[in-house]
Image 1 (cartoon, rainbow, N blue to C red):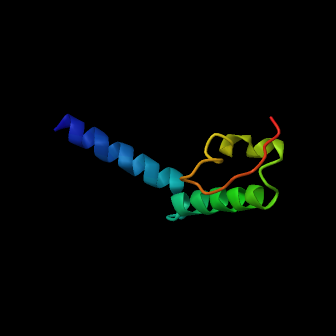
Image 2: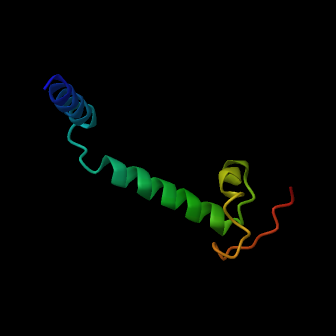
Length: 69
């Protein structure tokens, strides 16, 4: 019973932290997608696009670029 009350309290605190922005996760995903598309447009050459380097240049992604490491 105490665990149920604690978990409901945790959920309520998260809801209060997010507030009126109920699509908080959706906004984060859209920002990440926009950043990826910007990096893709410049062939992942900028320094902030390094986090995608290990995910590209393979058959699954279908994106092949010369990273010039």
